[in-house]
Amino acid sequence: MDTQMNIRDAAGSKEQAPSLWLRIGFWGCIVISVAVVLRRLSALAFPPRSAPLQLATLDAVFASHATLTLAHILPALAFVLVAPCIVFRKPTDAAWPNRLIFPLGGIVGLTAYAMSVYSVGGWVERSAVLLFNTLFLVSLFCAYWYGRRGEYRLKRRWMLRAIAILLGIATTRPVMGIFFATSPLTHLEPSQFFGIAFWIGFSINTLVIELWLRSRDRQPPSESS
Image (cartoon, rainbow, N blue to C red; front, side, top):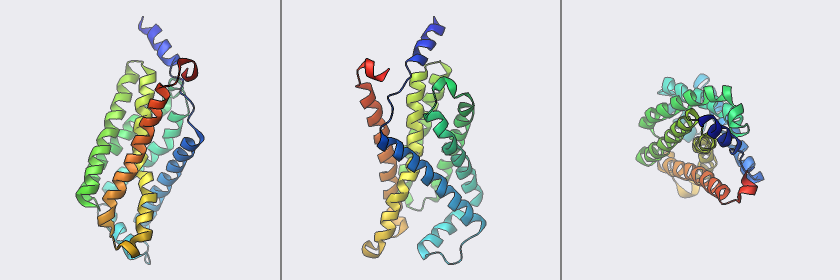
């Protein structure tokens, strides 16, 4: 009985193909995430001597807790690199990515809580991290739980949520770029706009994945299976 249910659930886990703009957004977040980590690694290993004042100040903040920063960004980099194997493969075909994605996600989530102690944007940024990081870990746990039960469709839904939320950190970067570019006019410092950028970036990703999943649920069975 359980085997038959698992087979039906796996067979029904075929997802509606994401639209072009969703695929572009996904790969854009992947590229930005990798670039951010590589830039941070470079700044930690070879601190730039002629960086703009605001950027130099940020580099100093991360350098002050370099070990924790590395413990966070290296697993995050691995998670981001494994994520496409989860997104674009059938749940039953993703054995080795599944063995990596859950422990990596757990480390990223736990170290994110620790990193929030040093939030550049104070409690506004910290509140965004606490909320969305908790949503990330809950989604990751639900994906793991449903995977253990053989309910692959639900596992995939929760895994997509977890991946989208984590990639919210990439969406914050263009938002921060806008704040940096307009700072001569607004006179806002990173401590003032980092929290706002975090709320905007993570909210966008969380809403987009939820809207896409719900739109898929509204599709007739003949179109979504």
